[in-house]
Length: 356
Ligand SMILES: Cc1ncc(COP(=O)(O)O)c(C=O)c1O
Image (cartoon, rainbow, N blue to C red):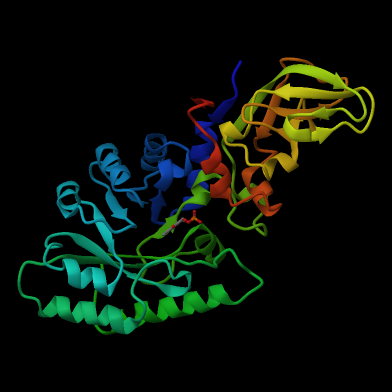
């Protein structure tokens, strides 16, 4: 008996197609495809007709090239490994003026996408002027040079509805795109929208070639106003009841008084799943499902947890931590942590991994 991390391929594929909805998508597959497994995810996305991928890791970009020989691959972080970018035909962000001036000769032949910083302030050119400066310098540079193939930004507030920050970053970005296009610049790829922006807009922005989507493709809703039926979670994480222990009122269970029984004959299921497998402490403040009934987690340890149960639960019963009822996104909206934070935490080396 081990704890299992399982993905239903059919549900995963159906969800990808529903999210895609006929639009051109750049699938974000960073961090081992949100922990769903890079090769599994790339294969699924290719099957759905997606031919464009982005990641933050050069090693992942190389792996994608091996899995998808003709796809467009975009590296969202800068690297100085320009030979590898050229060798594997990987396009890369151009993250700042300083980077451009330092490496403009070395970048010869590398395909870059100009990045606009916007409200996230993580990377990119700060203003339209900075972008125009690069474009002008690049035009004036007659020698062998980089290829400017794209223009992009990333939104920090598309999942926020109570503040105006998304409207602000959206307007700033659309203004940049429009001004550059009006000045006659052209780009093979223009992309900005993450899951939240793509879904709340219901379309791809004008003049954009792709929506750059991650979490929705992996089956979690980017914001809570979205109906559950619109996104399907293909992931189940389940464990087992190893044994059921009975403790009396006042007895402490787990390390350092983790839980103190409040009544006699409290039944605690010892479950073979813990934070060493990636269960967040915040997630352990909520329930699990055993035989279709919810029970509260009482203590979380590295390889185990205690779940308070009733007389219907027995050793070897299956304990569900996540499935289509206990969804990752439900816990996101309850404050457990971002969808990607919960997914990333699940430690696939200790969990048995299954694709069915
Ligand atoms: C630069 C960039 N683009 C796109 C995405 C995809 O965002 P989401 O998973 O919300 O669709 C991410 C994810 O963090 C990102 O960092």
